[in-house]
Image: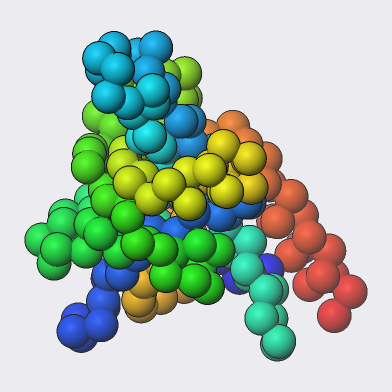
Length: 198
């Protein structure tokens, strides 16, 4: 099975266009909803209505299938860093969708950072164990409907990005974690078996 690195292209349509709230995030990382017990906000608001989670995880194989082919995609640390900066520089922080299909109003990316340390990172404070190089985000939900109908009910569990990327067919050059190494070993065995049968 092919493993394709997605990179930023050179055209106008390159980079991340929106953050989507989804039930099953492809990066397999759920967000957490920050509630008022974190910071007391007088009686004006009973909840902060902020969702925090991983937006992109470096070197994470993401399974894809189209009409003709099955393959994996991944993003390098370098691409994630550039894409996260470009997203904000292009003023896209208010662009949000539901399941990549419906535009959502009233959501804003209010915090954005790259995990730089295994231990001393804000993500660790909230129990999110993601690798160095992960793009983390906190999204403020000002829409009553989105909060009540989708977040509080658990219909959405994580973030997914949507945008335009070029592809570069090669394996990640950065070290992979244990799960990625196991997946890589399985893929190598499958390719070897397929080549022996041909």
